[in-house]
Length: 162
Image (tube, rainbow, N blue to C red):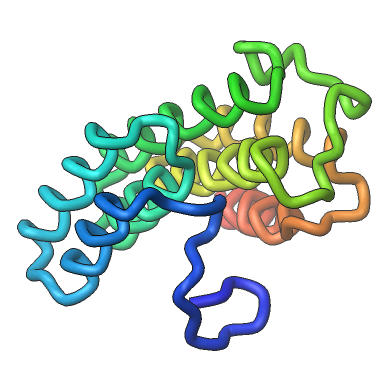
């Protein structure tokens, strides 16, 4: 599924995937959840530099409310994307001029994965960690092209509910 158009697509968010990984991911599409998890992590081990796998992993685990595993996958994706985009290891030290975060590629995937982490932290009741990431999203994505304001609104709502 294309994230931006909602249309059915054969493309994977984050870039291309090697043929072996594509076969595993195609199998995962129709597998039961426990089989899907095994196939996705097998794909990750088979191609640890392949960014789309991390997206699929953290979405899979977050959907099942397995936030610890979702965090693990997102952090791995952030690390791999940072290396590929020549960004600093510590996301707090990354500045707006370090990469073109609006262009498709590892830097944009890195930023999108930070947004995913903010959501995972919010859902796992770590509002302060989520808030810190939302602030970094505001800094690096001032036009809010990735939708970080949605998480900011959720955080505001949870603050108001107290």
